[in-house]
Image (cartoon, rainbow, N blue to C red; front, side, top):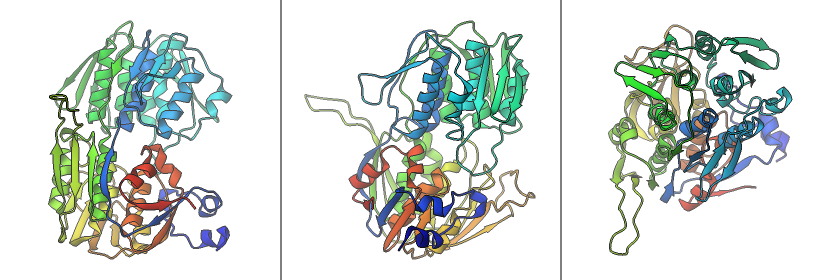
Length: 477
């Protein structure tokens, strides 16, 4: 079958997901052939959290001495931030340990608009360079942002916060030009919604702003707390109060840090969902129970089993053993559940897409109410083409307060199961939906072709090698 004919027969996700054009993807080598129906069995390891590592890399800009970051995954977002740091004069080098990066910010300098625009559309991380660059250089340029198309995710919260600190923002066709003619000063600011990105923006800006900053309705995800730990190591003074209030006392200088980030709880949950959907058994080394409690409760309610394997130190000449969590399908039927995504400590929005694939194998009606991103259920159309029975609704099918109830977004789903999944040709629309489509292909009978699969590299390190370690039958054509 020619590439053109393949493109015309793709399983297309919902238009709401702004998926890449099928023909454009089909004419590339960006495809993975998946022979489904084999349970995943084995052991893999997760490194530092994608949602922390890239932010810690940006934080290195604020120091006047080198920083050292361990357990950095080899993913595309890391390469984007590494490139942007290099353009601004930060020397980034590999350390002695695998996964270690060293950042030397001694010679921070301006980068040309043309150089920075090379990274336009590749990630949303560049917006977080604003505060550090304003502190180090007095000005900043931010290119057009990228990231996954799961809803508009406007940067209004970011820009409003920066203006509160005293920054001026000029929007131009090529991007944003920012300056701080009178310096940056502490402020009192309340977020309309506990946005993770906006909270990171405030933290990275407030730590060296003159005076005290009080942020209300802040995000308190584990990755936020870990970023606060990084900044505190650098010399910042940050207090985390109750009721989502963070107080930052600005300091005049920060130094470098040495930090090992928390493991990636999203990747860990994704492999757990893959084990459940394929009726397999996967041990995820590095996974930590404390940051996954909400997921583990749902996983067990669905009928999955897990065991926390704690770190074992070396003893009597025998090597130690890294801890993690073993996830498996115990046999028998899975149970339908009702769940709602929410900000931490609720059920994480990035957990729902992989888990929904497993829910297609549960008996009864499962309900998922997505309250974080309004356009995150478009991926279910492809699952339906594979044999799933999923209906999406504009109504709020749950009790959690939701911003999307009367705004015409299909943000609730009802999954009827169990459904027998069969192979299909799939186009990946975004990172988390992409891994979900991959799980579906692994669980389905027959051979699927997954196009646009390199997008998964944005957040999953060496996922093809890990699939091979788990006995999956996948190949590049």
